[in-house]
Structures are given as C-alpha cells and as structure tokens.
Length: 248
Image (cartoon, rainbow, N blue to C red; front, side):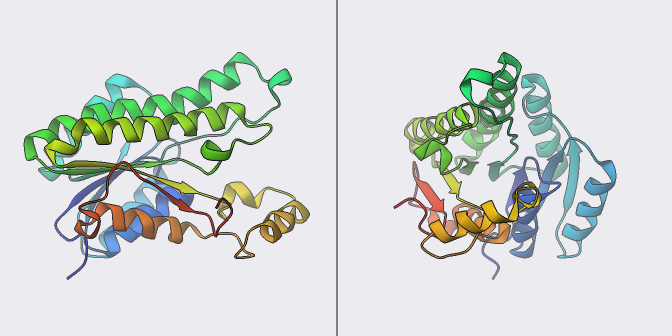
C-alpha cells in the first residue's frame, strides 16, 4: 500500500522547486493533491496533468496564501472539492535579500507577509476542518537559516525562525485533538533559485557541507511525505533538517 493513500493534501506554492517536488511525491504515494500557484496558469495546468497521471485526484488553485480571506476561501473550496483535508503543507515563500543597512521596509514587510503570515492564515483555516475530523498533519517548510541566521537575510531568517516557533506552539495547542504540527528545514537545495547563483559560490557551499553536495527537491519531499503519513503518527512539534549535515 502507498503510504499516504486516501489522504487529501494541500500544498502551497507548488508550481516549481520544492513545492512541485512535494506535490509529485505525495501523488506518487497515493494522496489526492490540491495545490496553489500565483503566476503561471499554464504551469498550474501542466502540474495537474502530471499529478493525475499517478491515478489520483488533483486540482490547482490560483490563490495568495498571504491574504487572510483568500486563504480561508481556499480551504473551504478544497474541502468542498475533495471532501476533506488531511495534510497541509505550507511551502509558499520568497526571498528579498539585503544587508540590514540597505534593506527597505517593503523588503522586510513582503518577506514576513508571504513567508510567515501565510502560514498563520492557512493553518488557522485548515484546523477548523481537521478539528472536526480529529485528525491532521500540518507541515511547515522553514529553513536552516531560521535556525542559524544568515548575513544579508535578516528578513528571511526572521520569517523562517517565526515559522519554527509557530509550529511548536500549534503542536502544543492541537496535540490533544490528534493534529500534528512539524517543520522541515531544508539546507542548500538545488532549485531554479540556486541555479542563478555564481557556480564558484555554489561549489564553496557544497564543500562546507559534510555530505559534499547540494540537496535535491525530492529529498525534502521525502521528509514531507513521511510527516504526512501515519508512519510519523507520534511525531509532533519537531524540526527535521534536510541539509546533508550542514547544521549539526
């Protein structure tokens, strides 16, 4: 049996990178998948077809997770379309890097709103359905930067550290309702975003990692599928680092 068969999962920001890999792995393991995207309708439609090829139900929603009302409506629509919601994966996020002295208020506010407020918005909306079902798994994508900090990323690090505190608090609040809340903290993962970085810098990063390589989006997705499944039924309030030993 596939490990998330008959579960319904919602993945935010799934049109590319880690979010796309998570959606595909969930479908491969038998979950019906709802996902959000913001920009390309064509990419959203293409992903729906890829997911359906695994024999599961899939639907994309053009929705902004950082908008409180839109997030609430999204969850209402997903439950109406799929009948339930078992797994929420808060993946949507952006970077707007810069040293503090040069960082604008807009750079700070945008990153906090999209990365952190969206997690609050969707978790609050999703838990209503999960509480009724007395079951659920919430998985928040944070970052090793949220644990260690990083020069030039104070806004991103603050948003990702905030996600960790939020994740642990929700685990304490909802554990008695059989709703689990965990976070996954990727390290250096090779995506379109890192593809724009100078190759020399990428090689230096890889050499600083004990496993001497960058991670793949699928390796983050595997951790998410584990946390979505009943294999992790007694795990909550945890941060799983998928970083090749970068932070030990």
